[in-house]
Length: 287
Image (cartoon, rainbow, N blue to C red):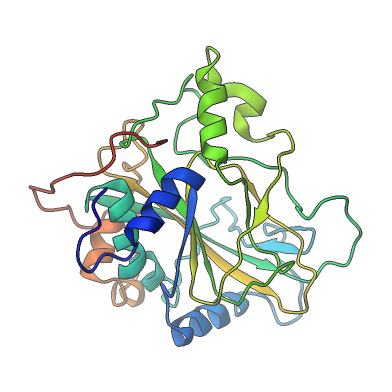
């Protein structure tokens, strides 16, 4: 893929994404933006530390959920992250079209965890594919590709609870799935991938770890004193073959609408994309 003037990702970074299955979008947020978002996420935690029963907590990792089981956190302080222009531009480069939808929006708080463990990971390797579980095989096309990951709202050093990935793992998943009929369903729909060697993605507050949708990944233990705070997002093309872009459009309050930019309105499905969005880029999502 040719990198155009002003592109967020260099040609080398784009090439590494297709080769390794992930890339770090540096300085997607300024330090001030990351700090405001970090405070907003931590502000969700009750002062008495009595977590709501719907929230999930495991190995020092806390994720808020509402009573309906929804984990999107779209408070006004965090909605601007959904339409971060630097991250969006990187997604456009990889997905080869400006016509995208954004979703997920969950947040994670990872406290220090001193419990012993045989692995650096606190979670089984898995994928978060945009391919429904009732589909038997991956298409391997650019249209099917989903790119997503998380904003680091705090600096993440080694052993600091960063996301673990398997370099080149997206290729392994694609090859193994293509080798058998119904490859989408291997390893419990790829939610329980056998152990592989993984690396922790490090970064500074404001960086975004951007992953291929077939990338095996997992949360990890935080052995440091700094509480890791992250916000998760995913992008798909509006012509996604499995309908991932046809998400229900949420209703927003006046306070929320006030902070949603014109770009955000299109990414969230509030406004349609104008006609004529050209596409270009690599021919296959796994090469």
